[in-house]
Image (cartoon, rainbow, N blue to C red; front, side):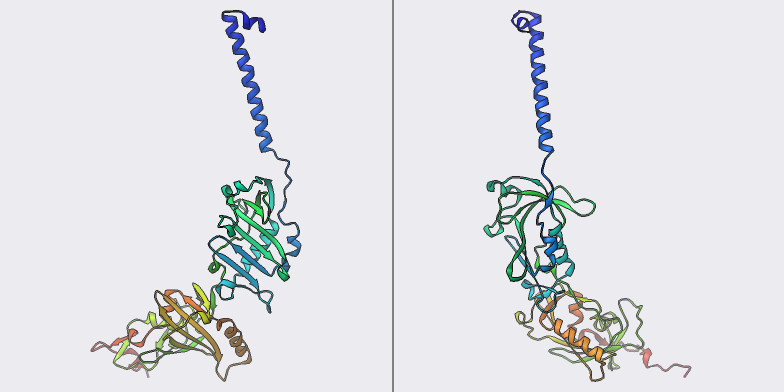
Length: 373
């Protein structure tokens, strides 16, 4: 080969091409080897928090912290099955979110080691939120503020699998080493999204009548219109009690809405009762056929409707209904709720918005006797 390279002419050219080809093949082989080494890792998958699975039931508080928001969820001191959101006046949370958070962290698995250089943390959103970083820190505390698990979550890597699990960059709090982890856990940073938004779920037709007392204007009563049709949409029919003969409803829809206002009632936000004052609320006293009494006080403030609720009973109520009222009052009385617009309107209607003068010549069909009688 050396002689061919030294010899002038065509043979030298061929020899040089051969040398270049050998070098290119060698470089390609080296590149493939390095690629295989990069793809093939000797990292053994392992749990992020090996002891958390056995200690998950010890969890007493979960804190999720980003640079813009903090969510604190705590176990109720008297009812261990109940968890509350501190930032929302201690309102109960959706229990499945707590389970998804703690159990999800216990099942989270490290599958690959990445950088341990702090200056690279910002590129995968693993800088500490306490330092205005882009990471999200989630910490699970046990009794006496013992830390059961704490990590900073960063960028997602790839998309979720069919079972909902995915991969995400993480690092344990206080460590520089980062990892790619696989699993599925709740990382919701909006306190309102944790809330169990149900207020009341009274059965259709259970409310017999509603005594409405506006801050200004005439009081009135809405009552069931005959036997309740439980299959009706959006609920059984109601009417205004003792309506003057010269008046008629503008629409039955609004009246029915008042009678059915507590069917599937939910809220969009909540505050502690001491943090929201109702200046001149409409008072609605809902009385059921079995003696449960729910009193709602509601008013519109700016663009939202707010309401507070109390529960009581009539003297004829059974012990079971009295126990129901006591439980409802304990749950509802500590809060003021921001309601969806439609439900808020149902709890704040003045009588003059529900009725209009009867047209001349119009016949009140209810006042006409049955010819068969």
